[in-house]
Amino acid sequence: MAATQTVQRMTSANVMVQPGALSRAARRALCFARRFKAAAAGLVFLISISLGAIFAPLLSPHHPTQPNIPERFKLPGGQYVLGTDDLGRDIATRILYGARNTLAAGVLSVALASLIGSVIGIAAAYRGGWLDNLLMRLMDVMLSFPAILLAILVVASLRPGMANLVIAIAFSLIPTFARLVRSVVLGLTHLEHVAASRALGAGDRHIIVRHIVPNTAPLILIQATAALAVAISTAAALNYLGLGVEPPQPDWGLMVAEGQKHVFSAAYIPLIPGVFITIAVLSVNFIGDAVRDYLDPVLKR
Image 1 (cartoon, rainbow, N blue to C red):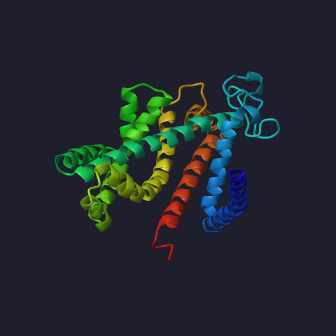
Image 2: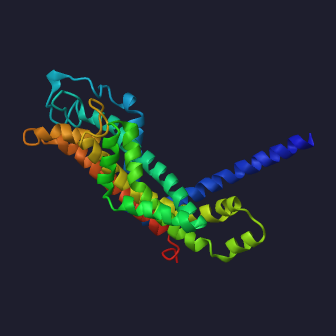
Image 3: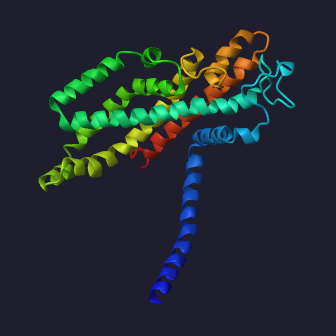
């Protein structure tokens, strides 16, 4: 009986706390939106297009790849909000389905690059010596190539496809994360609390997990938001060159490539996916700037 009453009191206490916690989170979100209006607008766009991509089969009655020749070159408006292409396919539907490939390629490649780059940076800075020299010289070689060229070399040596596209973009972004994390970890290893932990007998795993990773996570997050814009534009460029998603699967970059031959007769066909690429990249850049300013301790004062 006593145990039951205790559980009930704990449950009621949690219920009492949750509305306050939600209201505080809502206030923080509102303050963030007021302070960073462009980032808030960009976040709304990315959330909207992501939800549209997820629920595309429910939102659109049209098929993204099946031709409908009688309805080709329909101007935007009416039944076809964004018009149709040269095969009669609804552009709005293809935009929603294409967002799956474009945004997924950007997010997955940045996640993979941040993970591998962080491991390389921590290992190089924490171990030092020959391992540091070897890893950093390798990163220097990779940085000597432009990111888009390095991605083209990687994906061309494999074969076109979504998985290889993600690997290629991630491979081109790894050096940036590795150099950033290494520079941060070099400073962290000489801090007093890290030296104290080592003097008390803490192992390398404890120091890395408890002291190194938490202090590098904010900078990795800021770099990830900046890299996401690069990843989305690189994915669109590779798909435009035919090195990514294979037709007839929709993708924003591929839609621009397929529609460019109609740029003078039906300019809306390549223009619309190009506008979505531009807005997506700008939105990510706005969010990245806002995250950087929000996490910067100097600007918080």
